[in-house]
Amino acid sequence: MYAIFENGNKQYRVSVGDVVKVEKLNAQVGATVTFPVVMCADEGGVQVGGEVAGKTVCGEVVEQGKDKKIIVFKYKAKKNERKKQGHRQPYTKVKITSIGAAEGEAKKPARAKKAAPKAEEASQEAAE
Image (cartoon, rainbow, N blue to C red; front, side, top):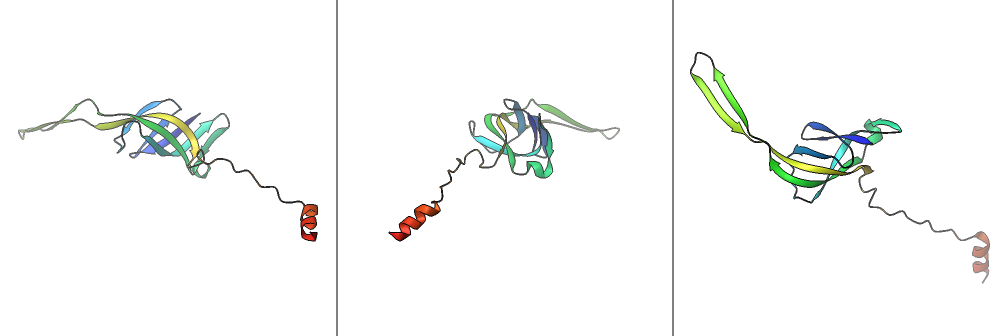
């Protein structure tokens, strides 16, 4: 089973157990984060749009860091204009723990239904 979720105007394809680098999130290492699902696929087929409304991808923050430095060099020919700049993009590494559980669905325990009193017992109680 895999899912595609969206974060930081980018989409990521993940399965349970994957570790992905996403745009920097405001979360501590070890915190749980959730992302809305755009598409979900398994043996039963593909689900998109309204079929995945409310489903989420849950993950645990593994690391906060910065990527490797890249060089940004701007140059205009015949103008003696040169500008050299470096950039390191911040990121958050997230390990995917679960896919597809609707928000709050995994946390709610199943309720036991109370049996309605039978008509005979109700009439006996009324007679007494």
